[in-house]
Image 1 (cartoon, rainbow, N blue to C red):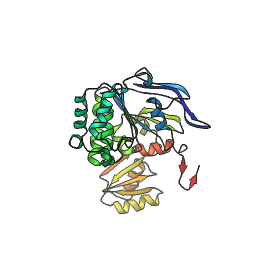
Image 2 (tube, rainbow, N blue to C red):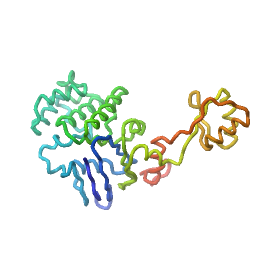
Image 3 (cartoon, helix red, strand yellow):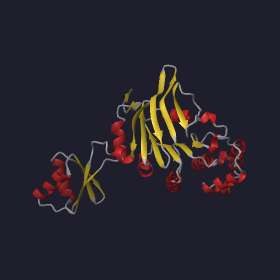
Image 4 (tube, rainbow, N blue to C red):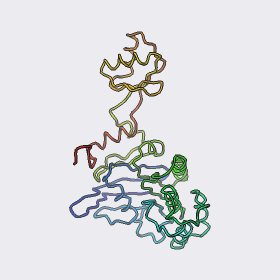
Amino acid sequence: MIEAHQLTKRYGSTTAVEDLTFTVPPGQVTGFLGPNGAGKSTTLRMILGLHEPTSGTVTVDGRSFRDRPRGLRHAGSVIDAHDVHGGRSALAQLSALARSNRIPQRRVEAVLEDVGLADVARRRIGGFSLGMKQRLGIASALLGDPAVLLFDEPLNGLDPEGVKWVRNLFRRLAAEGRTVFVSSHLMSEMEHTADRLIVIGRGRLLAAESLAEFSARSTRQSVAVGTASAVRLRDILTAQGAAVVTEGELLAVDGLTADRVGEIALEHRIPLHHLHTRSASLEQSFMELTAGSVEFLAGEPR
């Protein structure tokens, strides 16, 4: 478990994180979201003892991470996949980490196999692609078989197969009872991966709740409607003030309720074979909640 209480970090006159209080429980994948400059990376670094809080506290399983001499046995992390010696091999990099944390060498071989790097273990990391470096970072995080895992943008550089693999890995780790904390800007992946969310903006907590609760925050809902007379219905609904977009065989309608769409179709004798209200996406809810917390608006510096 990760627990932050009134966590604050200032750099001179700039406040990066302010009065953050939250809990990341075990047994779930918790997504960590926020606009650029919101303070996500600073928060992760304070959890890992890389930055000292100006005030407040943060603990990993009840203790400050700095108080744990063999840190990889308690928490694993991927903060920057590029932050690794390019002249070393993957095997040498993980072996050095294992020795410093008193982890058996057989564990190195096991995690290399788990992340799909066993065949390139003796190649220099400098020749790795970003996706391969991400896999190596994940191997480093898993090396000590820790109960707590933190990942900062772990999907960058991964191909679709790699993204699916990471998604399943996070779910498996959470199912094993571990604490999994994932910072990402990829809303579609968080929608498919996270059980709950912590959202911050300008260093302050905006939300800490389940994925379903967060998505339900949005005031926007759309109606999906299917008909053989799609073009005609689209023109009629547009004339009624709705925004209508074609999505495959369906029309996505904003600005009218499902009941009103059904009434209009009946008035114009247009048979429907599909009609339902769709909840807002995670991205829509996120954009609404953080609208006042973005660092820059398009065409309008803040």
